[in-house]
Length: 96
Image 1 (tube, rainbow, N blue to C red):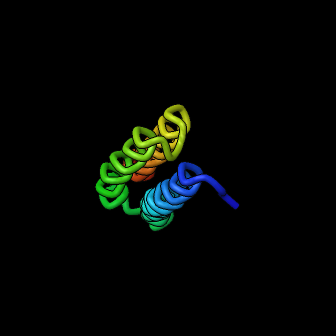
Image 2: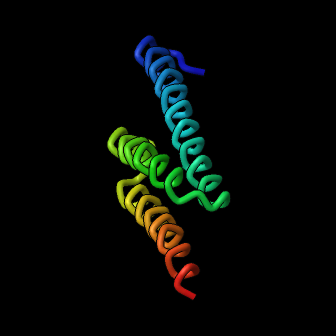
């Protein structure tokens, strides 16, 4: 337990920061799940639309320090590749 007034204040600040970071992490994970669901449904247009919003949320999370910048870039890159592959898939299926 914190004894000094400065330590007590630090505990209060940490609790507030933790709550904010938990909220941001939850929002980011929700957006990631929405993209995953759009990809699973096979709807390329919906996946592209959700990906634009998700990219913003993920990069903002990195900027705020919730996740590392490289982690955010990796997540966005992998999702973009999957959405791009999904968009190209119907074109190749129609050609065959």
